[in-house]
Amino acid sequence: MISPVITRQMVQILPSVMVGRITLPDIIEDAIKPPTEDINFEEKSNENEVEDNTEKSEAVSESEKEVIEVSEEPKEEEVKYAWNAPCMMVIFEDGDVNCALHHLVESLQDPFALDAVAVILVQEALAEEIENRVKILMKPLDARVANHPCYKRTLMKIDELRPKTIIGPSDRVLPDATPIMVRDIPHKFLGDGPTGIITMHIFRTPFEATQIYRKEYPLPIASVSIWNERVSSVYDVIGMMNLLDTFKINCFTVDMEPIKRAFELRKYSACIHRGYHYETLPINGERKIIIYPVGTIFGN
Image (tube, rainbow, N blue to C red):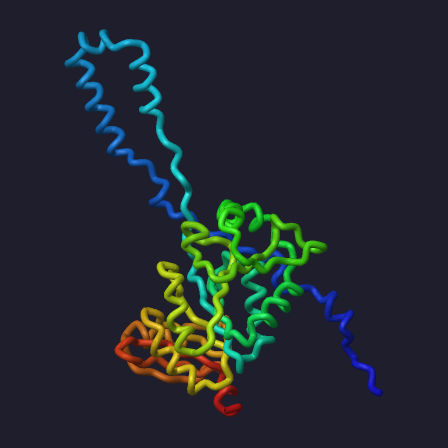
């Protein structure tokens, strides 16, 4: 028997390229800007009213003054955060679960990253396997994520709604710092803006998958990562997913530059770049970008 050069123990101690690469959501500036012009206008109008009604103001009782002072106190504005081009992942029974899980776990550990998975649709036959394998791969969240207001707010909503959740093992991950997948509840019920978790929905048929994702509206899904070795059948699914324009088949983090210009100019285009097939074309009246590894063609 030939002993392997690289053992399992050696792989487990290799440094991770993800260490330290944590993204936090951007604050929506317009939501926290104070209405300075309106305040100045109100102050000037109040000064004019005071000058014209000095005699009436002296008659105001102490209790009324206290009520006025309380009402004039500025309200604290709630900070709002922006989504960072969230991705929806769709895993079919014939898809490469191992590769899909690799990218899914990255998004669980760094949920606010650009193009991170926010929603996952799983074909029913794979649901139990996905849940069990994800639990094993979960690690404690980085403190910057676990202490972020978006994540903390989501924990409060989960505690209130009591949905089914997939979280890390209790012997390795604390409940207030665990990656979370929430079953069958859209993001809109968990918070306004990025939530720091992934919602999971189950589908039986490809057509059902094209209907379930609509529950997540108004989540601004920027791209869809579809895992299915039968590429030809994927085109039917893409055609029924309205208002979504970027589809990555059997891949995840891909350079968009080779097809970006053609898409913006509304041109038909197809090319191969660094092992990936890129094309932009209209499907059911909507222009789409479709990308997949070239090896997928020969494999089928």
